Structure formats: structure tokens, C-alpha cells
Length: 289
Ligand code: FAD
Image (tube, rainbow, N blue to C red; front, side, top):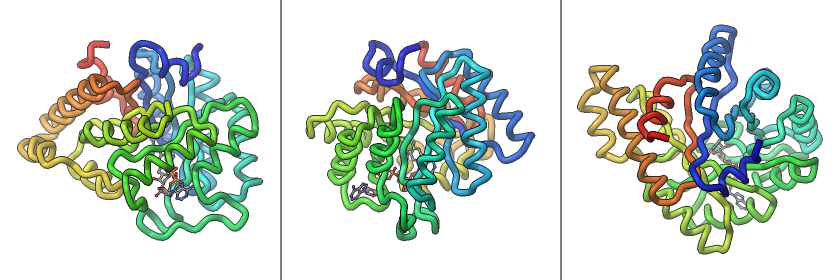
């Protein structure tokens, strides 16, 4: 199988799907149903996020390991610097390797007090994601991805600063970036162009979240600092009383956005699945891959 950077460099778009570690047995079963359905479209990789607590972190190791052993899929495990010393971070990377996971999304993580509160590093830990990229790359043959923020990271003074941060991450060894979900293709184009202008060839895979629930997406947009364009809000609000129609509009909006991003040169699309498969598969089918 080809590596993630090889697929991104090749002709044709890459498709990838993101999950979060399930909280209990019922959630785990729902996740596995989604994974099995999404496996059918042979994505480039599937990723599993990394939470703040010890038990959820163990679940990231467990789920990515099981994906590696029991499916045809290529797993990518997320990892953050939050509340961990360098020695502890090394240990988690070792657990990923032991579980057969060779792709890591290296993140700083949100401040321990939640998004918006000031960042404090562990006294023997790391301050920024670029340092984690270097750490993971130094521990073995890992493919390392990083986060990108087309609508500006909430703590960042400017898009130019965000582009400079991506350059640092690329120089530390990151081979691609995955973006926060976008609703405005122009925001992704602006960030991509800034990185290209800095002479770096770092693929930035745009993140897509098909809306299935208006309130949920409004909350997530607010937390992540991603503006919801008023045209999108208006289309969703027009059908807000009809859950099936909201889903349909959400899939339509995501399809249009995906088509526009691919036309602008995106090498792939990364779907925030919320551990479900239906909306993502509908968008995928609409793209006629
Ligand atoms: P950094 O790159 O360290 O950036 C953090 C801030 O510091 C930014 O404002 C940046 O501009 C600034 N900065 C970065 N480097 C430097 C530097 N060298 N000098 C000065 N300033 C700098 N969170 C989780 O907890 N678990 C997950 O699994 C997870 N998955 C994610 C997946 C994706 C695709 C994305 C987009 C985000 C994810 N997050 C996750 C959220 C992420 O951890 C937060 O958004 C976090 O606040 C920023 O992480 P980062 O890796 O971009 O950090």
C-alpha cells in the first residue's frame, strides 16, 4: 500500500475519515459499523482523535491498533502535548508503533482549561506542535501530519502567522496537514497560497463536516472559531424544523464545497464523520469518484 504522502502526490484525490474514541460499548459498536461501511470506499487513511484523559487516550491506541489488525484500512493516530512530559509522549508513540500504527497527527492540543484559555505546557513537555513533529520523526519511521487552520487559529494574530507556523511544522518533518473543518473554500485557498508563497510543498487536506444537526454545528463552529457563512446558515435555517431536510441540505452544502475545493487543487478531502457513515457516504457518492 502507498504511503499517505505518496497518495497525496499522485493523480486523483485522497479521501480520509476522522473518528473519535468511543465512550462505551454501545458507542464502540456504532463506530465499528461506521468503520466497516466506510472501509468499502477504500479511503487513503482513517484517523482517531486523542482526548485529554488517560482512559480516552488508551482507547485511541486500542481503536487504531484494532483498525490496523482487523481491517484493510490505514490508521492514523492523533497525539497532543497536553499535560504530558516528553518521556510520556515517547511512550505513547511506542504504544502506537507496537499496535502497528505508523501515521501520527502531531498536535499541541487545546489549553488544559479549554479553547480560549491560556496555554500552559507540562514542565517537562513541549510548547508547540512543531516540537512534537520533530520528536515523533526522531523515534522511527513514522509519517507525520499536522493541523492547519484556514479560518485562523483562535490564538493566532494573523493568517500570515498561521502560514509561518505551517512552514515550521514542514521544516520539522511534517509531510502533510489536515485542516480544521471549513465552510468557505476561499479561506482554504488563502492559506494554501500563503504556504506555497513561502516555498513549501505541504499538502493541506481540507476538512469537511457534513451538517446533520444545526445546533451541533453552530456549537462546534463557535468552539473552533470557524465562521459559518450566512448563506449556509440561511439554507439550513430554512429547513430547521425538518431533520431529514437539514441532513439533505447539509450533504448538498458539503458536496458543493468538496467540488469547489477539488477544483481549486485540493489533493484530498478529510471528512469529520462524528463516528457515523451515512452523510459522509452520501457526499462521497455525489462526487462520483
Ligand atoms: P500549534 O501548531 O502548536 O499552534 C498553537 C498556537 O501556537 C497557534 O496559535 C500557533 O499560531 C502558535 N504557534 C505554533 N507554533 C509556534 C511557534 N513555534 N512559535 C510561536 N507560536 C507558535 N485536539 C485534541 O485535543 N485532540 C485531537 O485529536 C485533535 N485533533 C485535531 C485534528 C485536526 C485536523 C485539527 C485541525 C485540530 C485538532 N485538535 C485536536 C485541536 C488542536 O489540538 C487545537 O486546535 C490546538 O489549539 C492547536 O493545535 P496545533 O497542533 O495546531 O498547535
